[in-house]
Image (tube, rainbow, N blue to C red; front, side):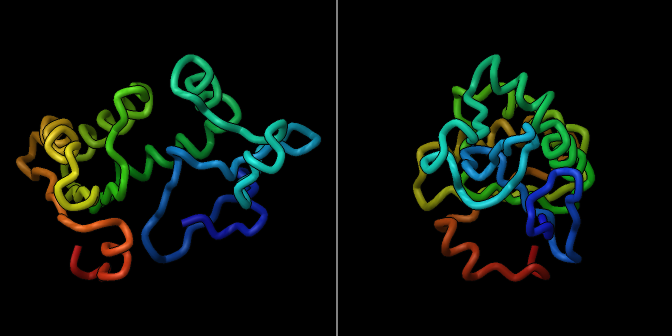
Length: 162
């Protein structure tokens, strides 16, 4: 979990709780006047020129390997080391092959993690997401689907139950 109030990527700190990464669809990354990237309040709609958005395709790959490489590297390192992984509201969109590949590669490298999927009851993408994750699970620890909405999961979540 990011604890740094300024959002400075060079000073990302952890709490004792679970690490939380919100990389897909995040609009809080912004570039300051010196060109440094910061995490903070959503700014894309307020100051589009300062917003740092990785749209699927070549520009996202470039951004993930340059200005946001620290946070991407940290996220995938944590994913490779985690004991539990919960995908909340993330359906592995077809248009984002880069993120999908990196996530699946990290899960493939981490055979000890239990993986949970929270996409909402009856979501049409559940079977697809579960199948992709299960193909990474040589250990036999298939992904578990929780049939609830994201807000339900966060309300009911108890760390010790995972």
